[in-house]
Amino acid sequence: MPAIDRRHFLKTSAVGALASATVSTSVLAQSADAAKSASTPDSTNGTNARPPKVTRILAEFIVKTGYQDLPAQARTEGVRTLMNWVGVAVGGSHDETVDRAVAALTPFSGPPQANLLGRTERFDIMNAAFINGVSSHIFDYDDTHLKTIIHPAGPVVSAILAYAQYHPVSGKDFLNALVLGVETELRIGNAVYPNHYDVGWHITGTCGVFGSAAATGKLMGLSVQQMVWALGLAASQPVGLRESFGSMNKSFNPGRAAANGIFAALLAAKDYTSSDGMIEAKRGWANTISTKQDYREITEGLGTHYESTLNTYKPFACGIVIHPAIDAAIQLRNQYHLKPDQIERIDLRVHPLVIELTGKKTPQIGLEGKFSIYHAVAIAVIDGAAGEKQFSDAKVRDPATIALRDKVNTVIDPAIKPEQVDMTITLKDGRKLHKFIAHAIGSTEVPMTNPQLEKKFSDLADGILSPAQTRKLMDTCWRVEQLDSAADIALAALPG
Image (cartoon, rainbow, N blue to C red):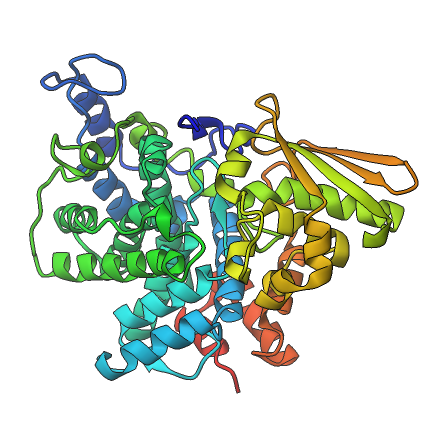
């Protein structure tokens, strides 16, 4: 199959520039001045313009932007990002993948500095960040920036929540670092996507390490020069390949990115140096791991437009490109009170990307089911849901699921956008039921509401925390800006 341009992958409606306090004019002035200077070719526009010094521009933005500078929408979405992340991290905390990571690292962990969400063990901050990052991604149920398919919270929140238990951090400072870390990784991702992703990099890991380093470095109070070095050290630690999808290795990537970012910030704080242009230099990060480098994505609108406000939250625990099909299946099921034995066949017209990413026809384990549009549609009709329970090993192997899965047929139609699906269910009595989804629930056009996020959170915490503990933890997340200590979030996630 020819390479697919993901430039329009689940493109969301444009969001206007947000009002905010202006970031230091020296940051934006430097960006403009640097972009005008000439020396080396610019791979984006074919001119001889030297790329702007984006590593330093980002470092100044991160260091100089305070909580009071964040626009209201960025703060609001930051809180929702935190809420969603804590829920999925608790929900994944007792998965076999996490058990294996805990067993492997316990003998070698340093001082017990930070909690694991949903568990009683404590690890040093880098190992705690790693394991919580794994836990938050193992269900493939975490937040998603649809323009790049980055799952932003895993690398960032895993890192700063661990650090907040080692060094006192207020809730406002914590939220500020969260937003700035997410903004950093998303802007860097925009600069190299889709080419970087197409060749096989798992962009959540490769860009997430920048977010982790930025957020941790912000809480540590790094100077601009130290932040430049932290970003440079992060650039030296890209992690994650798409070949890992469908295995435990996939959740390793955001976890490792979280730990690597802390590592970079700790070294930079002691003046461990790096190149000052590690992102944009000729032999730097962007030129080495991508054939596309659009540095305008990093610098334009910095401090006025926040990519983090485009973050979305999954209502279904699987690959994002399957969500329109699940949405359609559940709507038809509920509208017509469908039973599997009524169905003759289910036909889907989908974008080619859907089959490339989720075309597993005969998944054998739950992780593979998350990348099977056939399984996802079948369980959506059978259960009217697609949460983590619907992607268990037992569900994937259930004869009833397999029987309906075999009736699901896909046709590639380039006229269908990646965020769309056209579904027709043919019943045994000859009736044809049709549903076209332009934007699935969970997209920026049809976002999950706060009550829906709480329902998702409660379902994930069920069996790990008591209902009262779950309520307290959710309230603590919603109140993050009022917390004297952000460590209260981790403490509220302890089972008892």
